[in-house]
Amino acid sequence: MPKTEKSAPGGISKREAAEAALEAPVVVEVRDVEKTFRIPDHRVDSIKERAVHPFRKQNYRELKALDGISFDVHQGEFFGIVGLNGSGKSTLLKILGSIYRADGGSIRVAGRIAPFIELGVGFNPEMTAYENVVLNAVMLGLSRSEAEARVQSAIEFAGLEEFADLKLKNYSSGMMVRLAFSVMVEAQADIMLVDEVLAVGDAAFQQKCEDVFHDLRAAGKTIILVTHDMNSIEKFCHRAMMIHDGKVSILGTPEEVSEWYMRANFVDRDWKPGFHPGSAEEGDDAYVVDSWIEVPGGGRVENVQEGTAFTINTVVEGIREMPDPVLTFGVADENGVHVFYYEGRLSEAGVPTLAPGERVQVTATVDNLLSPGRYYLSTRGFRDGSTKDMRMQAVRITDFVVFGTAVGAGMVSLVSDVEVTRPGTDPEA
Image (cartoon, rainbow, N blue to C red):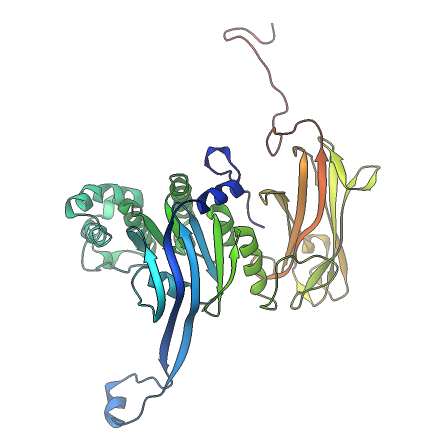
């Protein structure tokens, strides 16, 4: 389950920020874009093979990478693009960055684009980092003097001061991606195209990328992000789009697209948002039988008073053998903002494998710090002891209301005691 998302700048909700972004002018307009690749049935790998069979006819098959893609991106919008491997999302990004030419349709862009699409593209391995920064900055639209003025800043951001005069052929892949990302940031283009940047580099660099994205989002920059990381989609994007088989599968909120994408990895491609427990989806290894809220001595409840501890109970039944299962749970408010998360590792309870027909119950005790409002529980199931191979998902399986008087006091109440004193006085006196 994705981590808690920060509020949008200015204290407005994520939904309000998305609606505000849609009121801005359109800066990227894509209409009916098509792209087809010709792939040879027989690959000629050597000069000898071509010489021996000089008149052999080469047959090709066509791969329709994009088939009538249409969407708009507004000024200041953080727009996400997701899709399974081979769906056409990276091809679309390269067309937007003028690396590929579309076979049909139209693309209109208002502003200068800075593409960060592929590691090392545009870099000369025989040149130093300093020289490559200048070259790439000029290629991204800066003048020579502007590029030279920002070299030092770019190299410092990448943390490569000691290697500025080293040729790039001696750089590691991590050093290359840090340098490329820093060039994109320093270019300060109107529109940024980013492909999977958060999946590359060490943890410190990934956090640095996230900090930059937060700053760019707050500054109203227009960014198109292609990624497999649904956490990034839900954390940063105002809207998102999923491509499947070269067509737009869904265009909507980050949460809708994230749910669609996660299920598309394992189940029927015709799945629609709105799955509820009680019946299993095709391809699932388990499903939710029951879920409820309970207070001590009060049994099942739908409403909980603020400050009153409660438990969340969920019963899951196996459909197919599920080795080393992990069940994750997330509670979100009505706006879809995730408030807290927990997980249950069944192996710790003596269930190394969830067998078909076997049931387990996960009970979480909640020290209730939630502010008044309605909350929803969703769950996902994974196999093999990690949270990578998802085999079950149930969205908003149950909801409950926290009631009380602290309305508008924030999402959670973390402060247990407030003390007021005069400066310089002893509070114990």
